Amino acid sequence: MLRHLYDVDIKLLRVFYAIYEYGGFTQAQLALGISQANISAKMSKLEGRLGARLCERGASGFKLTEDGETIIAASEQLFSALDEFQNVSSSLGGELTGTLNLGIIDNAISNSNSHVDVAIANFIESAPSVHINITIGDPSELESKLLDGSLHVGIGLFNQLNISLEYKKLYSSQHALFCGSKHDFFNLDDSEITDLEIANSRCIDRGYLESIKGLKLDLNLHTEKSNSHYNIEGLALLVLSGQYIANLPVHFAYPWIRSGKMRILKPESTMASADILAVYKAGKSSSKVIEHFISELELSHSL
Image (cartoon, rainbow, N blue to C red):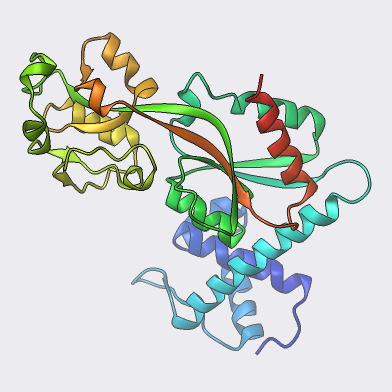
């Protein structure tokens, strides 16, 4: 049992978390830059300090024990709290220091309305001592990480339902229903395609889009689940195959529209617009690092 937490314990926990994150001792070796024997010694020391076995390792591979799963969950909370403390304490006095963990949905920056790159450039210029980490994920993942503190700011499409988060509009994104050039609809006029035919076509479920106000199409689409439905590239590949239709961002699909490999189906009824939002935790706990980055985002998208 660990009665007091010391700096050495935090370092050992970070080693254990790296092993968990990379899926084993061998995989974590390169990431940590230490030998496997050294990793094993540190794990033994941590288990001795905690009085519990945290993982099984050997020929059968790496696997967390029940106690190990508990410690991993507690470690995530600990690391998040340490990051938050560092951000708050680093905001005291003069120069901003610390870390900014930023999450963005995939392909958002390819929208010409996006000036996130400008915001980042201005932020780095004004706060050069702050280190920025960027994570790409779907909105549900980003919201979850914002709530547990592992992300500080998220950028993407959100349903704005969580009262623990603040949402600020940055720019708009147009979406529409697409088919590929190999699809039966491709060479037909929109007037020849009925809503019923669209509804009965194979359509890939885009997941989170169904929860975004303004993007849910009133066509009773018979959607199918796919492991690629949160990844726009994977979804586009299925559309290009000619076997599926799907809701895609217009800016993302534009190169295929221009090359004649995709088209929008009935834009008058399937074209819709939604806001790309900056999201962060509500309340007065935001650090000056987060506040400064949010202000740079707002400024870069107001020009």
